[in-house]
Length: 433
Image (cartoon, rainbow, N blue to C red; front, side, top):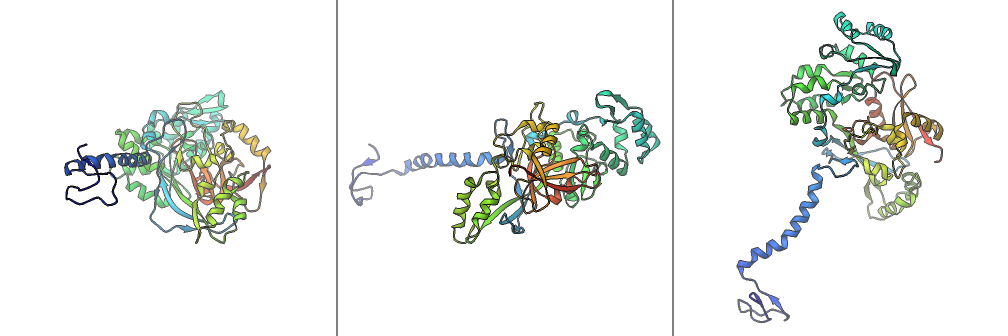
């Protein structure tokens, strides 16, 4: 048929070795055949690369965004019962399509003072470094709200705009004590060491940078920002708003890898990383790594329970559901070993009772799965994280959907929650462990 011939003399008169049927193609058919052969492989390559471009997956689950790794040699951690862990710092920010959902209308909230009468709030304003005009304009907007046994005010933008850094810090620190004040509770936080670099990333925006930076207030090693409604009107373009929000929400975390050596005590590693009845799940993997000449490393993510494994470095998907803003640190910590998340832990009352009845304090070295509590001066639990190894935790810092599940050092989490005075760290363990 056309180009197909029996074994024998080819176009050049040569004879095919070994006999049997063979195919001879004219030059004009070669491009066609190459396309037919290579096209399927090109399609497969495209399908493998496309999902990594930050496009969110369909469905209700969390969405992963490729983190950006720094170019440096892995940092060696402190050896312990977890073995030897190495780290590579990375940064991660929400996908742009998430941030386009955010607008000033959805985040501009009034100030709530639960448990305080109007007279008590007036007296509190007297302690702040406010001008007489600022104080009188704030007091004029106070309204008693029986539902919170306190009062509420919606401040005039001009008053908020002109607050001094000290007044802003002290006032917002007080507001952050109530979960009703979501802007202050979930204030954007930027480490002092990263602040100038973050601001430089915004240099191309048509934004009054001097005014913008005046809205930040300092708490120990971080700069806080809670006045997005004052800034959005200056940047009406969606792309500019997304850049601003990505700069504000960018998180520093790290990749963590366990190094398993040929002479590693695999039984000890299984005992540590298999807590929660998972030894049989990770034991064979660790055993196989220990048999590789020279040893091998494995991402710590593969050694975590399924709940954490599915969520690390991802963001909750935005939703209009009533519990959209409820997947916080407590829900995260109490579900760490859960095959299916238990939404009873969206209820703060149940969280408090569970921590009291199902856990006990520990004073020795924490282990994988122990809870790390950050406690305020008033003895309130302000944050809960899960201990992983070598003084780092699995955490979600806040309930907003632009806040990812990440790894952080205990000391960095403590600094992140430094707003509002001294914070102490304590550890608790499940009674059934």
